[in-house]
Length: 338
Image (cartoon, rainbow, N blue to C red; front, top):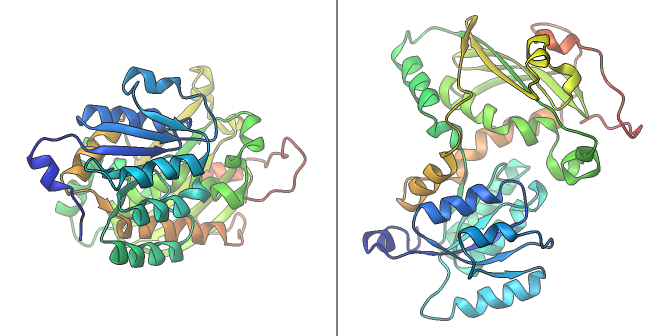
């Protein structure tokens, strides 16, 4: 059962949001989405107070750095004639499960940034809580809303039904030493490279080419992961890294810090543009009752969970060419393999 989504939209009344994680990197996209869809950010919470970004869209938004005060405000608001309808979550990965639970128990529908959770069993428990509370949780799977990716999915669906495609995914997004001092560099909090920077790509690939049949990890360290996925209609070699030393020469010469390519049967598929408004479009779809429910995140969460707990087999079999790059030493000397 969904709670108070379409009724308010039909009456064109703004819905009231609470935002958890207002100071984080991804929060501005959620703030913009709330504003662009004509809704109201009533209250925000973050233990850090660098939230001047609220002024541009919601200067009257209440803000708290203590969860107890935030909870008191939200609980009191829920007993008024002007209750909160939504809780948006933009916090570190390992906190998503707990904050989704908080939002559902508060009596709100929830929108959570990627990755929804770190483990598949978390999804099972959240589905049960949805049933108990009558509220719904949604996740952001914005690549499914990208025009070119949706067109690719349609092309594959309309193509030969027995064709198996050869796919190479390469994603290198450079990060400095700060990364390893933050929660992002802790595999227990971020989930590792595959989870933190790859979960959207794995969701995209299984959405287009079908469910996973085999998941092999060739190389995995603190700054990269390379492996092979056998999907129903594709053989996928992937390489993901946050180390600038892994950037190809053409990217270095162009002074690029991020390199993203997807090659299908040797032909490069370009989708580097068109990301600006995808969070807003995600919110529009969710508010219209067409968003991605938490169960739809399960395939990608299962993929990254399997990768995280796998033992790399080394350079054996069909591996991505960049998997041969020499491994780097951890900048702090830690023996961190994920």
